[in-house]
Amino acid sequence: MSAGASPFTAASGGLRVSIRLTPKSSRDQVRGVAVEADGHAVLKVQVTAVPEDGKANAALVKLLAKTWRLPRTTMDIVQGTTDRRKVVLISGDAEDLRQRLDLWMAEQP
Image 1 (cartoon, rainbow, N blue to C red):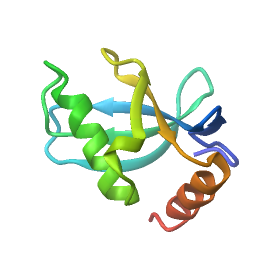
Image 2: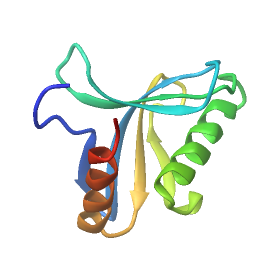
Image 3: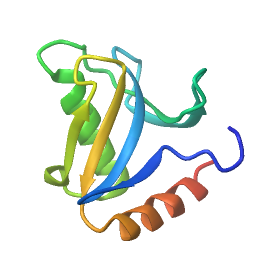
Image 4: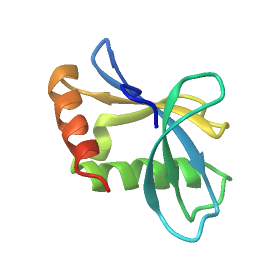
């Protein structure tokens, strides 16, 4: 991970999270931050759900809500619903959310 790279971006009404989702994995987990070939930082996430009928997207939101202890209702996939690269908007105070998630990232191995 490059220094200073973050998948989190403040947005109107909340915080945007850039994600690279891998469906049909062996387990549900947030694997950490990676920098894509285009230079953008993404949060790598794996889910066991299959990518059909929105199952992988639902599993993604459920996993993020549980991991970050946030209500599922505050999260919406606003970009990439049918793509591996997604953007999730977490509704709320962007600065507060950013601090919480930066702290969460710092605690990851």
